[in-house]
Length: 193
Ligand SMILES: [Fe+2]
Ligand SMILES: [Fe+2]
Image 1: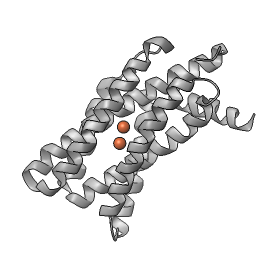
Image 2 (image 1 turned 90 degrees about the vertical axis):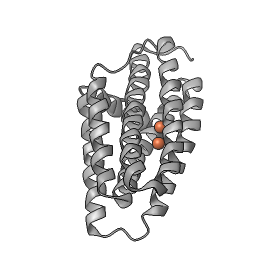
Image 3 (image 1 turned 30 degrees about the vertical axis):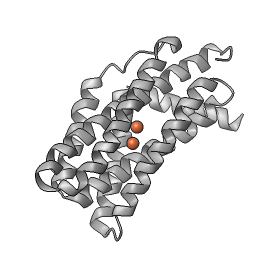
């Protein structure tokens, strides 16, 4: 880890906290979807289970990255837990297209956040940069898989994707009490510098 300014160290700690919470939310989304899919849409279960395995590894990687960066889990993990679970449950009830619209929206939001973070971290925390780079590969595969399943999304599915995208951003903001927007602000200033 490079010798960081106080402000940069805080941003790095926030990155790890937001990502850990996000991965935890993803675990809950996929778990709820698998629960419903096992009953109604068994064809979706193998890919959802594979993704769930990835999210568990991602969550563990961010958890392990916390102590050296003086970061702790987000204060309102319950919020992620039930928010994610409810999102997964409701979208899975809508059918396979609901499942994949949810995955596409969430993974695309995750991808945007990770891209900004990578830019910030490259000169500041090589180790975390490497962790996120590897994770981003898998998130991108999740996004592509979901998009392949959404062959001809109609206006309703597009509306669902937009709604989930907004809900995901709100969830990120609420659960970190603005940490994520302070983080985005710090990342933007880094880009302009
Ligand atoms: Fe993940
Ligand atoms: Fe993912």
